[in-house]
Length: 98
Length: 371
Image (cartoon, rainbow over all chains, first blue to last red; front, side, top):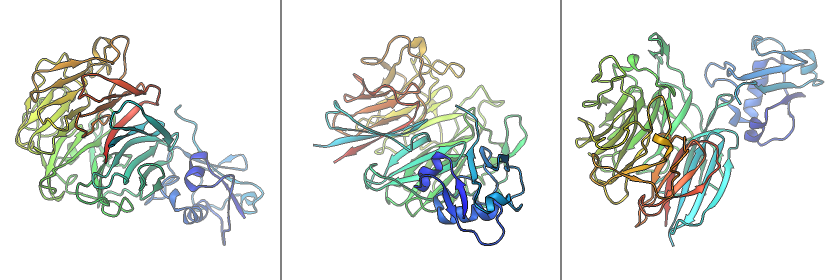
């Protein structure tokens, strides 16, 4: 199981508490993970990445394994601990504004 | 007994304020969508239980929420706003071409004839339409296709389409306003548009009487006279008696004619309200006195309404979508401030009292008159 941590506003929208678990087949990348997340929670479409271009929204960051993966290619494999479920993939609202 | 429901959008959530027809005691519900910017909340004139809200965030983008029970519960509906065709460019602040980019929905205008039909005015400026209760949105692209589009420029708050007024007699006639492009009108349901800015004079643009480029802040209409429009421009209060074909200034004896809101009394088409703001560089009331000004002559002659409003040390602003009127026999007038107060008058502006004092900055105020 892939573990995903959402920021509080998106947890509220998705009506979940705690981590989300996703069962992904095949290679796990940002794109396949977010595709699966949006398929399970359609309300999140457009909140993390653009509807059409699939580009990450500017104030959304992706962290995992104490690394910032925000600028990694969306088709790059995610770190092994994420694919094995020992570490979560974190969707984070960037620190900006008040 | 009839009542009212005031729908308030703020920087940090939406609030629903309800009262009976006396409008003395209020129930406050909220925040709905806590932590999100709620640019606008408006109910269907045909079905008061149907309410639409624009929920937005610099972090997580745009959502549209819909309530079918008068604001008690909400469900997110469609949030896919995609410009038709190649988006093209408008002018950026430095005069260079800038691609059209969707930022947020400023204004939602439910149809006068169908509760499932609603218009959305967005930044970067465009008009969208949903015919299925907000699930799917389609741009009425004729507006942006107007030849002047590449020359439109954002105001300080962004290039927003913030005003949508539908003619109740000719539903295919719609008036919109964009900061800072000006006012436009369609007579064919949004297929084609014409600028309606003749008579406006804006010293802040190279050609003060240009066809487009004016910073229109708000347009108001009384439903019984759709050819008569009132406008609060960046500076100047204006009036048109020919559906926007021409405008003339009616600022008259206002102490300052800068401001954002303008509205019309529910039963007196010549009675209008504005809240004068000191200037474009000082967005607060003159002399620290919060005063609504009322004209009973359709402009030019104005009286200050001060009873119940702070008359010292008040430095709030009243934003363009933050004034509304109810349609009870004694017309109620409402407005919200950037200081988080929502004021109500149950006697057409003669006296005022705050419904709430400490909300987040108020972005919009709408009111529903309930049976």
